[in-house]
Image (tube, rainbow, N blue to C red):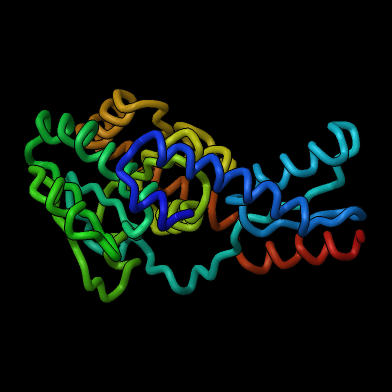
Length: 263
């Protein structure tokens, strides 16, 4: 369905395909789980809603088995310390792949509806887009937006991330985004993300990151970080410590082992 969603420009048909995709995912989970199960360990929050939906439909709300959903463990030796990289003032970035319609729609929504306002108020600010697989028609539509710089062939993504002050993560679903968010936290970026980010990893608004519930909130929070970079630095340092205390791979291994031993 990803290909169908990306190919159609009809909003009604696009919504229909998205609904079919969601229902198919729920059905697949119901088949995978089978009729008999005691515990479920799920590695990716992307499927959390579909899984719980299948469980609720089959077992009823009072009979849900224990579910363990570990967040990604991280090898912090691969991420350079932020203090080793010079941070470009007033720099904002987004990175990801643009061969999915959802990512295209989300990024377009951000650039045209949010960044246009931010850049209008702060013309010295820069938005860097590190995108893979960007369709030519998508780039032709928004590629010339003021204050937006498209970047490719990045030798080391962590060097790139650490050289920027703010990471933005507008999200319309959970899939494929948690790792980007956690990596940005580990690098020490200030982060402004959609509300889904809180459900994806369990961080706290105003402590490890800023959560924006709508376009105007994105504009206001980005403005705060541009005007007061010290807030972003403090938040980035807090986020880095938070991630390291929770997501070191060895700690995640211990939690997973404990789950297996309880089976």
